[in-house]
Image 1 (cartoon, rainbow, N blue to C red):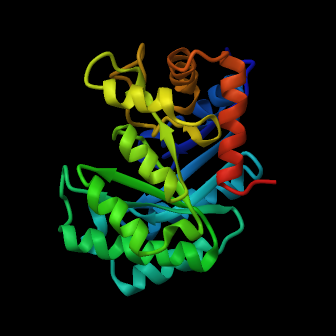
Image 2: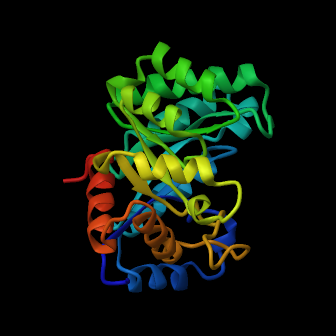
Length: 263
């Protein structure tokens, strides 16, 4: 399976989880034929975003970056931080804005703070004409409403680590947002709705990701996730969709390149 081209559309290589052995992680990614990786610089502050951009500069043409503030930390978003993220976002190796969005499941930040930040980052994405990387959990209705109200369809984007159902996927696609599926699609329990959405997602609107270091796929569930493990998620999704594995990998790689406006 390692001969098929893969694009990890969403991982967190800047996290401390990879501090000690990042070089080995990247070597395994190359061995698994990862053509590109997008590292998501979205955490508590500008530090995470800076690290993601630095990684993209250290590996030009292979690793790309996005910048934003995760919904968990939007209570800490102020004008100074937003301006710093906005400056980083103009870097040519930054290919998207986020992850941004709403997480009502954990609610680490107040809902109003999350909604305000989400709207601000959508506006930033529209100003820079870069796609939006959306995190949504237990907030489907408000996520779709804000995307529509803020005219996010002007730039489109991706619902990352898709964990909703088919009607949500269709509604998001109508707004110009494709769906990216993670290791959740390989889980034998509590993933039926996600698997059904993956089966029905249009061929040109489906991406794959690890969300590493989180959500390692079966048969590696419980381990620290890394980009090389994407082969397992890709294999499961190709099986669910009754598609040839190599063709599925080629299509999702093409879709990710299109999303991130790569030549």
